[in-house]
Image (cartoon, rainbow, N blue to C red; front, side):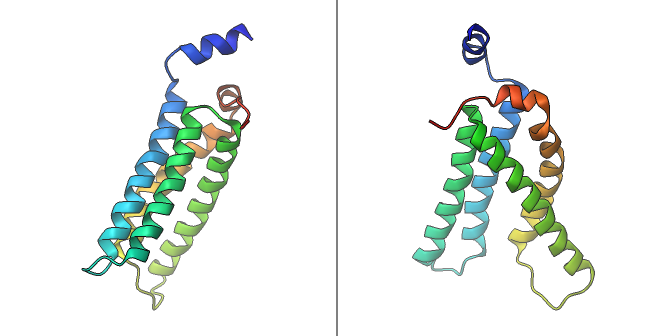
Length: 137
């Protein structure tokens, strides 16, 4: 118990800081790129969807910063999904599939695939299990 109190009062370890920062930046990119890809008079639905997607990233970032174990699990699933999804999109693009990829897909894949490939092993590690110990409630 005393070790957990010391861990709470000490500054955030690098793994906690980096994983939370990744999801916060992903949230900002999600909003900015959705607005950028939208037509000139920004429709409300696009802004609403962008804000919702960004909010989900910010919630995961907040949960990781607070060291909530459930958010670590969500982050691991997200990293797996991102790598599979964007590598599939990259494979389709390299295979000259007759699809149009918006610039947001390219930017997101360039940012998220390498980040998730590096972040996933950390999130699975025993060190991450020790860092993200708090229950949701």
